Length: 148
Image (cartoon, rainbow, N blue to C red; front, side, top):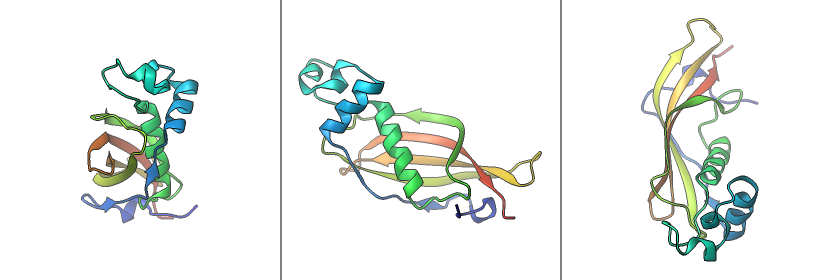
């Protein structure tokens, strides 16, 4: 797998992604397996909820965002290897018919002090729908190889 090395990243760089379309059937099938709550399982079950209608699980949104990152322009050498989050929020629900995009901004780049062949980039990832509403915001630390 090829991609960008630690030396290729600079604070302030931004990267985009493609689009993921969210279908009601995918919302309910993901929920049935991983987050079986009424507001994720059916429109009927969601009517009386705080969402007022079918909403994707936040974990579904996170999984879709991961796919967008892997297939998007960020491309760290060795893959998108997460070391943890500094921030993780779902400000608005994802609905059937939404079109999601992920935008990434490099907020920090640090070579490892103990492993000279790698370092960490801190990335702010903003996932938005077709209206520009933020549906997920995270700040993630990614392990990245240094140039051989």
